[in-house]
Image (cartoon, rainbow, N blue to C red; front, side):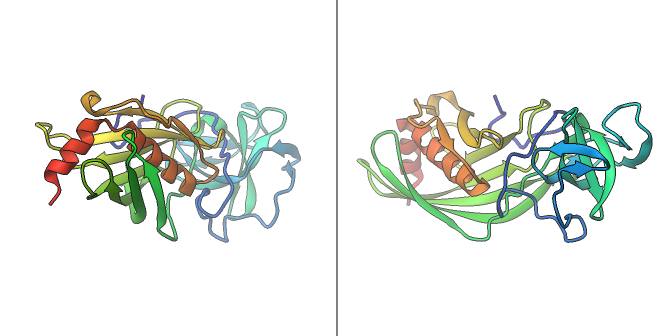
Length: 275
């Protein structure tokens, strides 16, 4: 389970990670210098398959002429260097086809690269969700910017979520914070990205942040419930998995999951601190 409320501290993240997303909000924006003019199915004489996208080198790694460890070395990627990827070698999908300045550079062993997604939003996201007790909350998700983590290896996208809720108790208005890791948060091959919603000022004797964490998988295109930081406040979520064809859909899905997972104690605490 993810560590709710805590931004991930990466060491060396590894995994054969495919970027299973396409769209304006789902792939890190590449500069014109990095984006190839076309996506041919051959790369330096090798057949390639899979999705194109932006990756970051998790550590210093050699670039080779072919998708084999014994192939001629043609260059090096430094840790933290961002590159554009055309796909994976068809003969061995653990090798990734890398470009530099829109020109083929060579093949890199996939465990050394991490797929990046872009959490930036060009508009506010608005919607409504239902709480476990049958109440309704309207919400607005606003993109606040990005914060670097792990020596600038990747960034975390930050948001503010404003709620206006109605239910049996009384109308409530409150704000929470939300963040998305733009690189996979675990040291494994799954393309899982952490989304965590934090209630900063929770009362009832708890001086810690109450966090609800979901996991966004870009291959399955789903976001699923992962856990909370305070078990006394965790109910039985009515919504555990939501389709997420884009980053925007994943963020909205994570909000829907979080509200459905809050127990009555959360609403009581929010009501106590409401003006």
